[in-house]
Every structure is written in C-alpha cells, then in structure tokens.
Image (cartoon, rainbow, N blue to C red):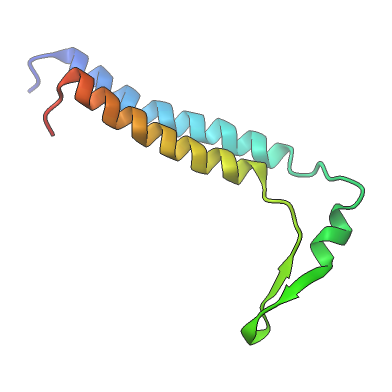
Length: 91
C-alpha cells in the first residue's frame, strides 16, 4: 500500500508518456517514409565503396525517424536522471 497516491501517478506518467511519444513519432515516421527525392533510387542502388566479405557502402540517406528516436532516447534518459536528482527520489 502506498501512502501517497501522487507517487502512483508519477510512475504511471513516467512509463506512459515516453511510450506514447515513441508511438506517435514512430507512426509519423512510417507515414512519411514514402516521400522520396528524384535521385533517391539511384543513391540507394549505386555502390560507393566495397569492403571485405562482399560488404558494400551506399550513399543512402539516414532515416529521419531513426535520428529522432535515438535523440529522444538520450533526451529522455537525461531528463529522467535530472528529475530524479531534483525531486530527491531514492532508487
């Protein structure tokens, strides 16, 4: 039994908010994945470098959704640590 019901709400928001934010960003990223430039097919197929074991490098663009997810993960982790420090939560 918890003595303070606000702690239940804080834990719910700490689990729910990043999940919902990730779902929205990922859904938007998948929805706009079909937008391509006029030279995107050529960039995806042309090989710019070859490595050992028949690995090849292409000049394909890095997906924006992946950059947003990775950046959001680091920001969430930073603010999670910061808020635990400011609120004085004992782990």
